[in-house]
Image (cartoon, rainbow, N blue to C red):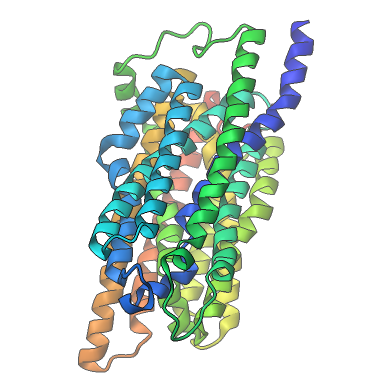
Length: 454
């Protein structure tokens, strides 16, 4: 009977994965809903909302505030204390509440400063809710797919989440059509937010389905939140994670690699347009290759890790591909869009390979009872790096632009300078991945390079 139940819930794991992926799809859409229509905020007179570019930048920065200043770590501890169902429900709900506050702020007719303050608070709540929801989803996949195709499941979840970004990049310009000289009403400006909140409402229903499935699975299989044979979670266990050298290697690889891509995406237009002499619309499609490529390749590379293992090798290869991409973006002949597309191809492969191998490695280096805390700590380190490197990239591009005006320097100097930073990040990623591969060889008991599905 127990074997039959286990087989049944192995099949239901794919239903659970679909339900788990929905909140992250909605989250990624809402986070990037204004990316391709950010031109609306270049001139406050273009919208009744009245935000300028600095205000829009302040709004987007709200996402990481609570995450960086302790919220992510504290809530990760709660995940291990309270379990995935309670913690996940709280923070999926917080994500929805933050999105609703943003929608209210941009549709209620407040003054620009008041609407911006409310939207900023909403983005803070949305950001923390989204990050803990993501941690809970990853923790849940590790639970449901342990001993099975975990890397494939994580790759599929990653693909669905990044599909949310891709959909936002494509759909938002259709919802808010560019019209020179037109002043956009509050309702017009808010269309992507309305669409995003609708997606979240659907995701809440699917999350409820997952909670019911997970509760029934634990009840039928005689499981609870605690793995049999392990001591209960204690706060002192956090210190054990922080003193784990493997945690720091994965955390450093995560922050260095992701910063070389996520920070690049935030300034992609400022880099690609002058480097390859292309219009903004072409640059948008060029950057959209990144999320679209991961939709296809992240699950395929996940299957590769499940069946062949060699996770540390794929981390090295993915980091090298990202390095090649940024070298192309920095030093390829200017004014030739082909090299921009080629760089995106390499970056897309790297952006699929490294996460497909990195995230399934986390459950191998720590006990299950601290898995939620460990994922949260990795995300916290990642957010610290993203906050810093996006800020540094902005300084580099801004100072280069000022130098260009003052000294009539070549306009391409800014993009090249910031690309040199991304090249340095990728070189460091390759080095960390190689050190981690050496650790795998020296500690075979961790099974870091063993097939995940066995």
